[in-house]
Amino acid sequence: MPGGRLTNEERQHIAEGLAEGLGYTEIGRRLGRPASTVMREVTRNGGPEDYGADRAQEATRHRARRLKQARPPAPPVPDSAHGRDPRAVRDFTESFTALLEEQGLPRMMARVLACLLVTDSGTLTAADLVQRLRVSPASVSHAVTFLEQQGMLRRERTPGERRERYAIDDEIWLLSTLAALQMNDTLAAASRRATEVLGAATPAGARFKSSAEFLLLVNEALQKVMEQWRQSRAARSAGRQ
Image 1 (cartoon, rainbow, N blue to C red):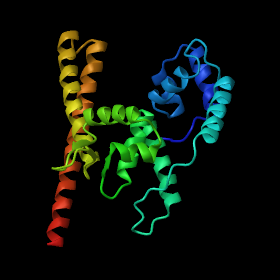
Image 2 (cartoon, one colour; image 1 turned 90 degrees about the vertical axis):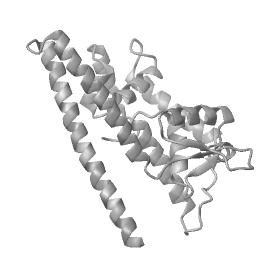
Image 3 (cartoon, rainbow, N blue to C red; image 1 turned 120 degrees about the horizontal axis):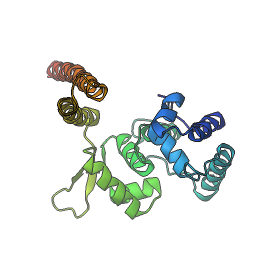
């Protein structure tokens, strides 16, 4: 899935799609972009009724210039004990944040998650995040609450300390996949129920039946992959003992 900022050509296609009455999902499919990316682009540039490609392109340039002038560079990430290049770490963090955004994560949440991921400890306090990201404590609090609800981080407090620390698990993507499995199971069950209600021989019922079959196949494949991963981890751990 392509990352990076939308091009002027892509914005022209979005404007054409809106004029045709297409939804965000179909426009995104034609561009090879997530529907959420198209929705954010349209929403912040006038909405479906007033979106203009050239105006959106110019507004994006203006926002980029304003941010560049108003916000000084973020301080280097202090985890430099391994001889890392702070600028390379910062550049990667920014690109990974953009990738998380392309997958549908809101920007502030993506920045907090990326900031945690590039630390060796995997834990930071609210004050750490405020300093590194140069945002308000309220922004950090909102992002942390969202990520915690998604199971992407947890709160920790060392006995005797007043400050909370926010931590990510080394198996964050495994946990994310488990959450996707649970959602797929729920959707598959609902699709099977829809098939019964609508009738498997009807177009709508057949659509739901096909969806349920696909979701179950996806879950079977994911479960096999996770089992292979667990076996691989166990073998590596045994080899280090």
